Amino acid sequence: MYAPTGIGVLWGRADLLEQMPPYQLGGAMIREVTFERTTFNDIPFRFEAGTPDIAGAIGLDAAIAYLQQFDFQQIEHYEQNLLQAATEQLQAIENLTVYGAAAPLRSGVLSFNVKGAHPYDIGVLLDQMGIACRTGHHCCQPLMRWWGVEGTVRASFALYNTLDEVSRLAEGIQKAARILA
Image 1 (cartoon, rainbow, N blue to C red):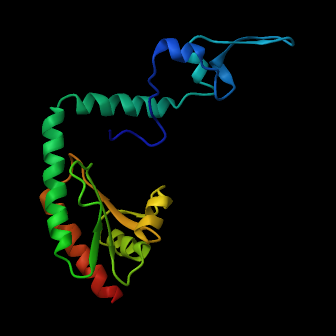
Image 2 (tube, rainbow, N blue to C red):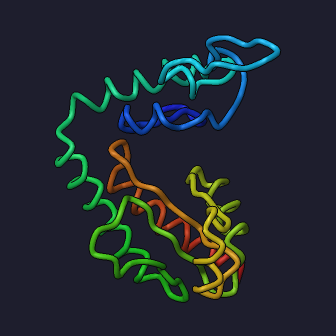
């Protein structure tokens, strides 16, 4: 949602949350503590141990306000167009493998590798060209093992990206592949 990292929202049915014990202790999650017992606070406070991520919450609020000015279907359509253009351009690059391209409904991410090049090396070169990507196993090591790779390069597309940036990504990958050949 374009909010700062480290912030999120837990949503649950009140009747189920009231039955759950806290998973973390500290701060405002208690109502009363004695030597004999501890009484936990009402929801949502019982799940808010410690000092809250105040800056993150303010940033999340700003991100929500920003996104509310758009129609979510239009955002999805725009991101899918970027993803389609990126998929087509990257699949045209020699020795490049796109992962997960067969999925009918995909989020705006595209994972790939260039044959003979480590994902990290591609990512470093793209970074030096001003193209931001992630590299690594992306917290899904079982999937990487299933694909038979150590990791991938992952480009993400969002409302703020352009078709020109998609083309710059493809050009940057070609240049990085030439450098590493």
